[in-house]
Amino acid sequence: QTALLNTREERARLHDKWARKGLEANMRGEVAAAATCFGEAVKLERRTTTLLSLINMQLKMGEHTLAAAAYLRLMESNVLNEREWAMAQAKLYEANVSLVKRAAE
Image (cartoon, rainbow, N blue to C red; front, side, top):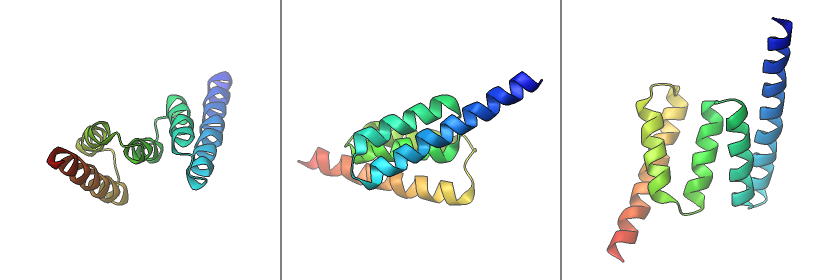
């Protein structure tokens, strides 16, 4: 039991470290690096906030189709709280607008 708890605590600590690095990279405008950091964090713990951050980076990198599908899937999973759901909905709209613009070009 103790070893399992330590492992969970360590995974949570490492998740937080990667998520912080992702936030810092995003603030510096290093979107690809931020996506990598959030991806590493998600591998350790699948927190909805971290998943949203990873998808947001994909959207910023122009991966509109992937981001739209990911937002929709996350919204359909019923794991988001009200604030997260509203953010995902707004970002899904943003992704879809970008897709429509690209199709019109």
